[in-house]
Length: 285
Length: 156
Figure 1 (cartoon, chains in turn green, cyan):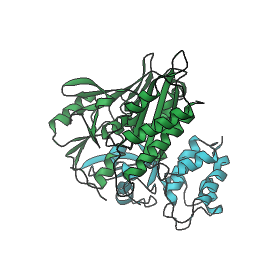
Figure 2 (cartoon, one colour; figure 1 turned 120 degrees about the horizontal axis):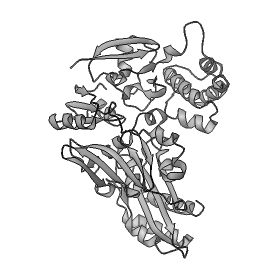
Figure 3 (cartoon, rainbow over the protein chains, first blue to last red; figure 1 turned 60 degrees about the horizontal axis):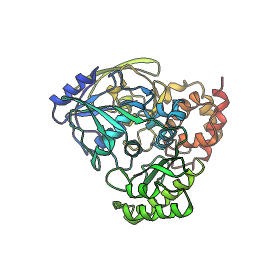
Figure 4 (cartoon, rainbow over the protein chains, first blue to last red; figure 1 turned 180 degrees about the vertical axis):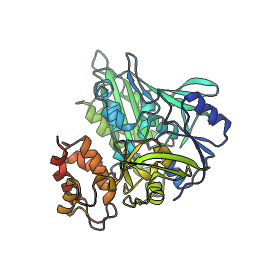
């Protein structure tokens, strides 16, 4: 379990980091290292150079503005739990991120690192997709904004160029009386979820669900929204029949992967169960 | 490639030439001969190698030695001297919170940093935090009791 050889640099600016990435084929960004370093320990990747962002200023802030909540790419999980402003500004973010990994890992793992790594069962990518977030990536060609829904192309695969760094995640602002819930299931506390479900919606003046968002992690090669389930919820009141119909619909539309420990059928069933639990929970949230 | 790294290890400035791929845990043990930090799984699952970096408990197998440049690193050796046990260590002894002892330095460093920040944590929170460390001997009950019993020593 010793890592392969690589070079190391810790530049002081995003521009310098991008230059190093562009000039060195096979280089990788090192943010918190809580996914990258295990990959190297297993020798699943042989980077030529690690470009550590630890000395780059301006990437570790949490900004709560009138239109959005912005997380710098190097914001650590522990910062999200410690920032009391977020409990009102974005309670779903706090709830989702409280499920990420373990105490020690939460002290180093970062928002940008998790987004770029793109594990299909990870909380941050799933949150970004479910909440219509926008990523900012900076590379040799300058800065660009990417919708989270367009960011993931496969398991651990994204549209990010090799010389691009995620500098910020913009999360649309959160209305005070929005209904929401998140649940995931894992075999041990802190493990990757087998599956997880996010739901949030608002009410129209008639008291019906509007703008429903249903996000799922662990059920496909990328985090996704279940648009059929959202369409089914919109314009209706939350009743037992609606929850049952939503569950039926989710079981029909998810197409989970199978691995050596978890069958596709189990994952599908878990998505249905979590969805009905979360939906029932939103009644009182 | 070999790089110079300098950091504070248990109150002393230390410096060495290391390969970038050397983990902080291996650097502490092999380069600086502080063998209190135990290396278990080497991929961030077991928590045995936990050390405290700038106040935060972290897995020293998931941090490169070169990343510790300029940091303050505390291992289990840095928590007491040979004369006495800290209240937390004494509590582990009193509550039979260890058997073989391999995982113990990781539990002690984690619990020390945690209790320093959150001396009034509930049992539920203690269990949540300790879930990042694996112990195959005790069944954890003694460890949870030991950490809860050590809380008064961390209250100001």
